[in-house]
Image 1 (cartoon, one colour):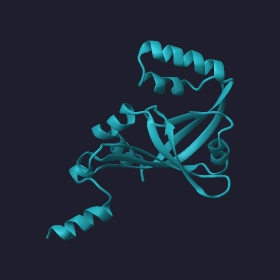
Image 2 (spheres, rainbow, N blue to C red):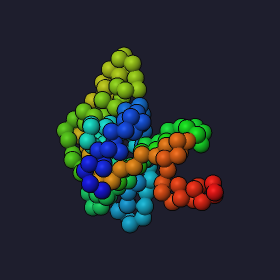
Image 3 (tube, rainbow, N blue to C red):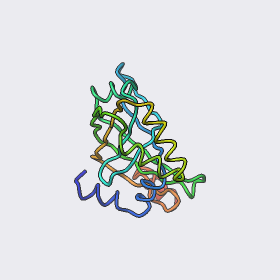
Image 4 (cartoon, helix red, strand yellow):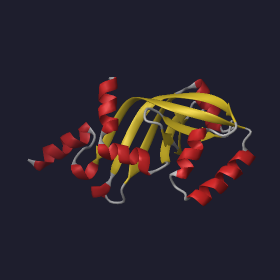
Length: 164
């Protein structure tokens, strides 16, 4: 997928809402043993990367250092008409940083009031001497809005076949 297509998908208003309205996503990667994993992660969208922060000892840190290709899905909606998803495939870059990853605190601030965020930051700074910063750069992106009929091509074709 070329950069222009990626930017077009990411710039859609509803895609931007998913990127900024939640700090939870599902990350898929290959574990050190060669088997797939899907885990829920917190993330922060920087405008061009999804950043995940975690302990340096987390299993995903070692696995992503070996196999950096990942998929990330951010979804929303409680009914079929409201179902939306932003699917991202990309490459993760792992960096060990001293102290706390700034995007980790920024993500927390989006879900907490000022007092709770300040307490959270104090606790986190007391807990981590170092953190792993996992920056995911999109190489392929697709926004789906099932209620509006924006769905994977194979489903669109199936729906069109049965509407005739």
